Image (cartoon, rainbow, N blue to C red; front, side, top):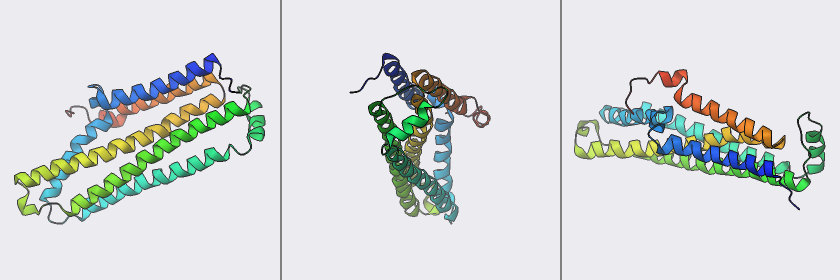
Length: 229
C-alpha cells in the first residue's frame, strides 16, 4: 500500500508548480518575451527573409539539417533514459539497499520506489514526444525551404507570406525542442526525491534558478541587450 507522507506530497506539488509556472512565464507572459528563447525568434524571421534573397540555398539546408540532427540526438537520448528508468524497476530490493546506505537517504517502500521511478519515466516520455515532434517540424521546414520562391520574387507578397509562415514553423519547432530540453533539466531536480522530500524541493529550486539565469541573466542573454522582442 502506498504511503506517501505529507512532506512528499508537498514537495511533489512544489515540483509540479515550478515546472508549470516556469513554462507559463517563459511562453505566455511579457517577461518571457525578454528571455533568450523568445529573442531568437527575431533571427528566425530574419533567416527566412535572407533565405529569399539567396540564389543558392545550400547553407540554409545545412543549418536545417544541423537542427534536425541535434533534435534527433535528444529524441534518441530520451528513449535510452526511458529504458534506463524502467530497468530500475526490475530489482527494487537491491537498489533500495544502495539508496538506504546513502548519508541523506530516507527509507522508502518498494511501492513508493516504483511510483517515483514511473514518475521519472513519465518525464522522459514527455521529453521524447516533444523532441520527436520538434524533429518532424524541422523536417517540414526543410521541405518548405526546398519549395521557397525564387530570389527574383523575394519582394512579392507571396514570398513575404512564405517567409513569415516558414519562420512560424521554425519557431514552433524550437518551442517544442525547448520544452523537451526543459523536461531534461527538471528531471535532474526530480532526482532529489529519491533522497527525500526536502532534497526534491532544494534540487528543483536549484534547477529553476539555473534555468532562469540562463534565460534572463546569462552572458548569452546580455548579447541581446537593446534588441526588441
